[in-house]
Image (cartoon, rainbow, N blue to C red; front, top):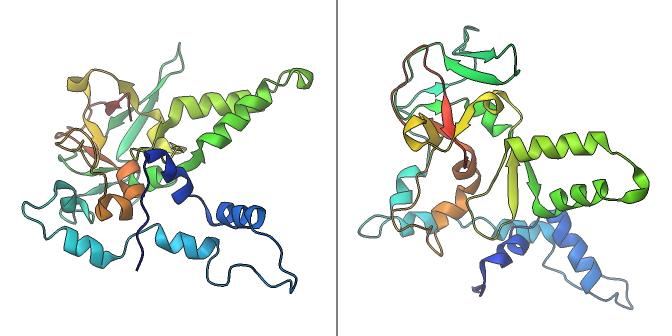
Amino acid sequence: AFLTVCKDAECRSNWYASTETIDDEIYERTRRTKSEQPTLLHFDGATHHSYQSPPRAWETVYCRREPTPVECAYRALDMNKKLVEVEDDEGNENFQINSDDKSGVKSVFANVDISKGSYIMPSDIAASVSLSDEVVAGLEDNINVQSTGKVTVIENFLAFIYKNGHRSRTEGINLNYVEVGATTFIRKTDEKDATNVGRWVPTHPGGQDPVFSPVYDRHRLAFDLFLVATKDIKAGEEIVRPVTF
């Protein structure tokens, strides 16, 4: 067994790097052998990827602590809560998307009653695109190149990222999620009392996530993306989310 320890949360960007990135780093940092055989026999990007998610057994042991860590209640979707998609299985629309004639701003209204805790447009939110800070910075650099003139496509794409993207709640991972489905039309506000949907997993009671938790590590993507109703929503009510998510 071995233990990997970081002094700073920023190292998570390396730890959670993609398989291709790790393979490229290995190629750049290791020397070629005279025999032309790989320098590393038992480690590559795919091997590193298998270390990124702790085993389920670790999660089980972790959640046997007393008192039970709060995040352990979110190890799986609550099967007693409804999945409220844009359309139900019969093709009936659960939401109505309206557009202001003057401004063109869109908003989303419920066509059905939605109970507190229901998952809001889970298929749409799961289709989000993930982009690292490096990718976003590269796009920004492209539009700043003087000799290329106006780069409208990239500028429009960046504007879309700024409007519909949000950062991962995991500090140091330097990852952004950009929504591309119907959730992009949900109005955002900084007035907490005016919202009726929010993150599936609330802010940790301690004010910040634990330094180590196999629950957060194993379910990071779901914790970053899923939206739930934070209160009962009646048919005809507008769906409103926090500006920070």
